[in-house]
Each structure stands twice: as C-alpha cells, then as structure tokens.
Length: 110
Image (cartoon, rainbow, N blue to C red; front, side, top):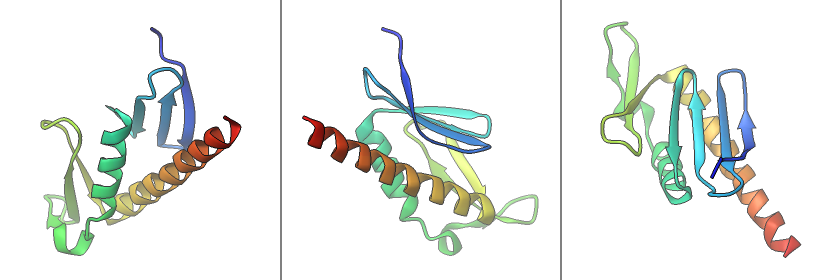
C-alpha cells in the first residue's frame, strides 16, 4: 500500500504529515525523517514538551547548552540548542492541536 501523506503542519525546515491510509506520522525536521505510529507520536510530543531545558541541558563543544532527547528508535536522538528547542516545542504543540482538531472534525462528520 502506498502512503498518501496529509500535511498536518509545515514550515521552512520541517513537515509533519500523516498517512491517510495507515495513519503513521512522519516527522521531517531539517534533514532527518522519523516515523511514528499515532500513539508513539503523542507519547513523543508529551515527553518532549515536559523537558525543562535549563535543568536538562549540557554544554556541547560549540560552547552552547543543548539537550538530547530520544526518539522512537533507541539509536536516534535529537539535540537542540535553546533556539532549536523552542522552535521544535512550538512545532510539536501546533501539530498536536491540528491533529486534535482533525479528530474532532472527523468525529462530527460521522
């Protein structure tokens, strides 16, 4: 079965889409694409949005504070400086709102 992606949210450096058939969610950020089933995506969003940047960040070789966060794959992690963290957090919050709105609209249409 070929996936038919429906755009949930997109920007200059990111895209979040969901397959119309299987409902898997693709998170494209900068040059990385990670796939999630719906439950994994919601869990990832909640987990990421609960991060306290100041408490969790460490100094990287570029002399900036960064956080590391896991994905659905044990060997893939994201790293963000403060600006990237804020951008990514906003992107996840907006995508959750859009997914929730689509779910409500679908329920009302049925």
